[in-house]
Image (tube, rainbow, N blue to C red; front, side, top):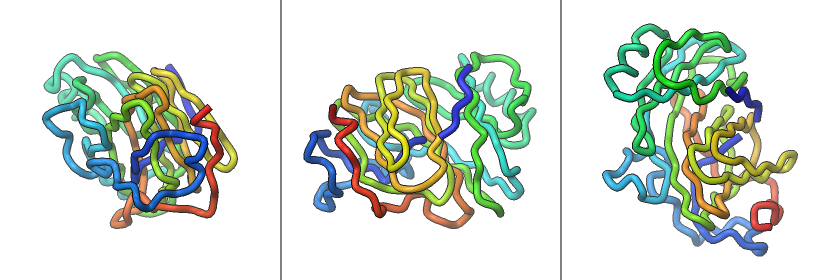
Length: 220
């Protein structure tokens, strides 16, 4: 089961990936949902949509995100009651149990898909923002950043990440953490993923722009 360190994105703006896409295009409209709207009835709708939130009043300096897939919402909800920070999400036509805690959290039932961490959030009260995103082939985000770490898990397809200090192509089943700073995400071949952003309570989870120009890595 993968334990990742570094990844994903979100004030999503969609436009075809090309070698000329090395600058921010403010004329391009945001991706539907902006990772805050509810999941639409048509789950193939491109965009980024909120699947849940957790309040973390005293999160540790290093925290892990456990992802388990369950057959039914009832089974996932029963297990969630055993954990301090847990929520059940419906994403990509599947039922997920998300648990935040130590690397050794004991989770019974379901199928373990990933343990991602440690994430290193800022001190103080936090909000854990969970989302799902659907990118058809050629969609990418604008350059953006977050006030805390962002993690993602690729459910289907391939995700590309471009940043000042790291570049990655991630297949289905892979996970990654972006600890901070400007970056962008792209899906040259299309992809579905799950997203977690840990942000200070009361602050926006996404900040558009950044002092960095992306490369053509995700268009190669």
